[in-house]
Length: 337
Image 1 (tube, rainbow, N blue to C red):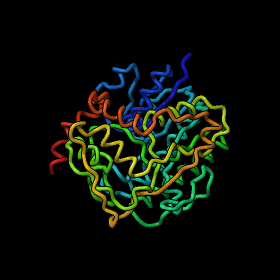
Image 2: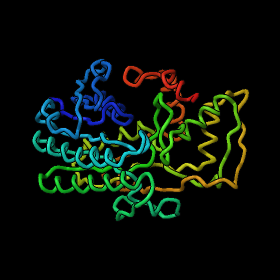
Image 3: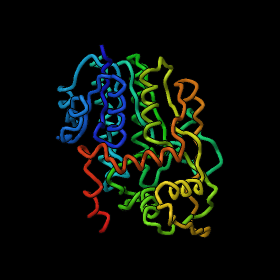
Image 4: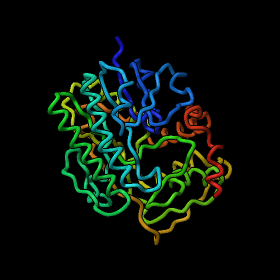
């Protein structure tokens, strides 16, 4: 019998890719999202879709019993909506508590949950490596503060339930997971704007100059969505011990990031030119140690940075999730505002 996996947040960016990947591997995937309708997307892939508000315990009654794993990717993000602390607290803390109660009642054996790297905020923009089990140090101000507080509380709740009810839990800490979505916008510091890497891709495709801000040698983690889904797969297959795992790979410098985007997205006969702006702010500097992820989960990064850009471009052209998310044309009006 196929192992039953429940993916919460299945209509979101990570959830949709994860659901499809696990379904392709042969798991009995049940997709759960906040949206009333998935436009028939999951049924077209052989999966059942459930509309559930995770802050409402009554909604969980429609979900199946006797499950194997919960992949809990639901909850509000500060980058995806106008800032609302109450939504962060209710969906991340109360929502996670409800998901945990459902899992225990459905005899689940494993729980996978994403953790924010802002729990290690004091190590950002330093040369210090972030290890999986480094104690939390997080900001008390800024647009990610309530989000981080809520995520930390959710991690503690999961650990408590895992110890009490004897199941394996896997927390996955990561910076940005790069993937194609037709909507190139997000919220940063309370303002809506195009995501920086999408803006660079757009400029490269139009042969426009690309500014290189600050120190171009500073590097950060560049993880592609299909490496992320591989790690979720490894968690489901793992016999433990579980705990916190960093999702990362080879750190890529700003110079390498921009060179790769120009190589893949610019016309060959008229590539974008780089314009250096050393007086502008430096890019993020961060490095996650993934030795625990490699040794305990058997993770091997499959996509190099350039390979991920090539696949990203293919997804941009084919739009495999258009039935669920729409197409890039649906967001052009926002782009021109």
